[in-house]
Length: 511
Ligand SMILES: [Fe+2]
Image (cartoon, rainbow, N blue to C red; front, side):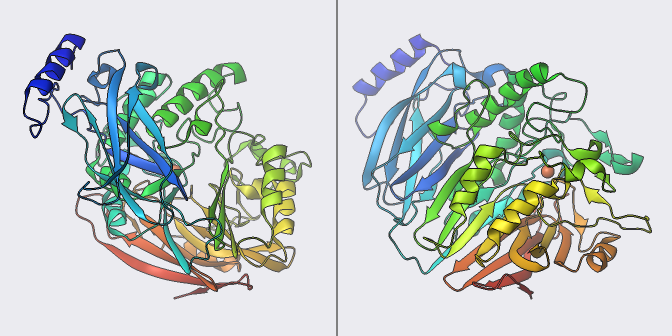
């Protein structure tokens, strides 16, 4: 906690002190408790982020409700001998004392280091890589894919391992937080009891203060802090940043669209405040322009999709169900007309060797039967519930022979083929959760049935972790990195499988 008077007093002390001595801290507690983060790298820069939060779980995270100056610097070496950019930013109470700086003017395809200073305290050091120039021809790209990190379900040890990987960036597919009530026990699926590995604080999230506090608790996790300090992230969001299985202005629980919009606006503001994203992603009247395209030289384009804000309501009243009439609705949409046109435009043979579609919900039409149900069972919150737009998209991918779809949401690993009619047109890699769902096991009971019922599905695994994608000019390799456990700290990671795709052939082999 600080006051303006303290701040002025300590500033004066700085002037009087020898230059080598740092200003005396005005803080009773460390203000950079949520770490630092970088995001949305481009060939000439990236966003750097922090939030002043001396007491993460306290009201206003322990901050006085006044703006505070935060100094930032970017260096070309980890020792900060050569500072290449520096400046000041205001951490404002309107945005929970978060700071988003869009650093520009940097060199392409190299690492940089950044840090912040406020009130005589320094943040930890973060590292981020710029992307290669659009005109470059990189030999390879390695990036990570992660998401679904229910705090109550397990430790973030997978993030500690992810931090040690050599990566250009991480794509986060969403469910960064979960909006559920905290506590030691929760009703589990099928009526059982789920015991929290560690307790999320607070009740179900509805207002801005609720969402902010949940982010603050999640972001206090040291392994998550490590991952953000190690790599720049491209963030998207899925449902649990706001509420389970919401689309557009529709949510379970009886809220009218007008009422849900209030909650959605609060949640998306808190999302913005805690994500290293650009000004273009700042909420405007409750909406976030989340979709964006990323170019990695001539090697890959990554189209990051928003599969929530523009989607029509789930058919068959949502859930895992047999097909109902609504699945075939001609006016159903997953992306909305504008985003669908944008993606259609981007999916072409040139100018990059690979087209990657980074999104949230499963595109494979998997029959989910694990017992002797009479008819196929589908996940109505996934693309399979939206036959018309799914068919349009897969038809667009046909003939490109360079499309890789990345997915989250499922809390399991999957790898398989996407078909337009009978012909395979793309591959899909579904990345498991960091913690959601708990320890898991190699194969969930009943999954052998799912593999047998779905010939397009080549791999399934039910452990926690993340995936890494090694993209070469002729070959794409996806590594499934899995944790032996997340229910206790110190879990080990190992490579469970690698899926290989040859460019020009929408097929994959699993080793
Ligand atoms: Fe999730």
